Image (cartoon, rainbow, N blue to C red; front, side, top):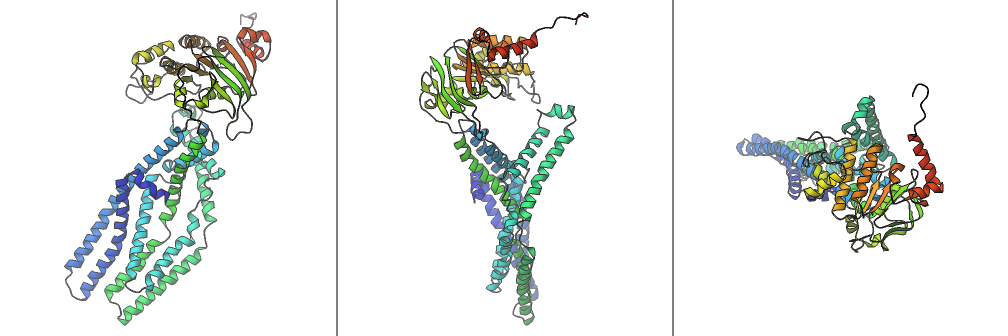
Length: 585
């Protein structure tokens, strides 16, 4: 019912046309049987054939015309339904203010299953499924129509024959149910198949697939995962199938009784030749009620729709953050402070942050260093308001970020992430997706050292007319320009998570000096593994096991001789030249 209820929401006109055509096509076979019987009776009684033949011809032509029309309506409705479902998934994924719903394995697995309505990995795409479902419904209506014709012969005929064919759905109902499709094993196979598919058809992995000869390997991985899906489905349905011999016995008995009775009445003269033809055709036509394509195609399609509808509510709940109403103008004017902050990712057992205390003076820069897993990126996500602490508070001038309107706070925050987005759009939209004056965009590009990388109207991707591709370092500068453009538009908190990862040491130093100049007066949080960069920050903190273990300037921490000093010396030793040997090397 959920599946059929969304059809008019995808397209009201096409939805109604689809149902009208189903009913029309379903009734026509019974009408054709009646007109054929009328032709036979006219021949037997030497009556005029003009009327019956014309009626039979009209019904026959109408049947032929409605089939392709229905196919087109179904395909268009299937496409509209796919668009509508994609819209719901986009709302489900982008609507929540937090990130937890996209970093939950359970929900991302369910998202993989929900998206399959268009991927065709575990079942046919929606526009194909809708055609199969439409054909199945037409058969059901046709079977009911033919069964109704049998009522003119005897009151018990439709109950006997229609009941027998309809009972096949009860006997075989579980053979179409993939009851374990939401289990981990099924979702794991589906996720792996989708991943292999994306690797094969996308450009990010194209170079390595060819360089290392992995094309056939990737296709084989997709085939193995998809075959595993097919096997799991077959195993799940095969074990549920009822013994078929009871179904056969029931159908043979019911139809045998009817045909024996009909034959007896024909011999005795109780029914004429035309009626024999009519009722025999109706008995055969009633077989359209049998378990068939509808029962196989509808469950997976309905399951995808149900998943999409459920995901919107589940993701909204998982990604929901507190939504305060306070404005963020001017914040932070004094301090950005973490007080006894604890945080654990959903589904994880070990906390990333535990009892974190840290104060960042407004208008200063703080660098955060530590080993992988120390909680550096989590710290950045909390500052950006993408997560909320499990315990403790993050405050701007003493105001809990949970009391501030999330959209207002994010207008005050900008960031450069290590995994920044490369939009296949013009340079102008890459720097200012929500628009900004051209002079502001050009100034931000100049601040980032990216002036002249391309014209503002140039699409940053090959494959588009006049498009171009940038190097990794140029893309990094464009990402920095995006953040600096936001600063020029009022952002006062700058988060830099490995902002120079794709630049060499010289480029790194240059871009960081540019960032410091352009963000002067902003509250800046810098996360980096390169100590040549972090040493220029006003203060540096060392994170270990989710806590601040050292805090101070570069010189203070070096003099302290603790963790920071050891990490700094270890990295600096890589750049110390060894004395040349006798050969000058």
